Length: 223
Image (cartoon, rainbow, N blue to C red; front, side, top):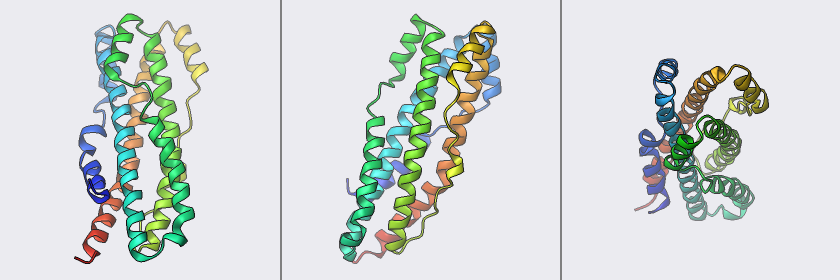
């Protein structure tokens, strides 16, 4: 697909991959009263959301970057904007590599069935690390694209660096989980739902602005 079409397809796919977990507190309660069975379903959904979100955001931002490069060529701005595009290429490569990590939700669910508890803790750590690396990288990429698009005549908001939450204290969480005989695990499960929700919601305003900007530039192109 053309870059503009890739942006539109990734934007329209948000409902499938960027799913908000409804009722995280109720979900934890259900996991508790079902002796962890519902928790396995939640774990599957968290791994699926992590994998799908990383891929969709890469596709969205890669398409936006390619579209901006096309417009820079059309407007005769490639020489001026080449340093910015070299920086975006570095960030995109980091995001691309994240999409190749072992995050298949079905396999992780199977592992969790075999070694329940341990697999989920490892999965939580991977998801949190993904979120931290992803948020820092996409924030830097969004800033670069905002400057590029401004030069191309379309304003995009600059991402707020305070949205990056930082990594959890894994050692402390594991120790508390052991000391509480697994009770803290349910609080950890709650955190994984809420922090993922916050990340998705923080992404949406910038995505909306990007979709509008790309559409405006497509409409401005000579036929």
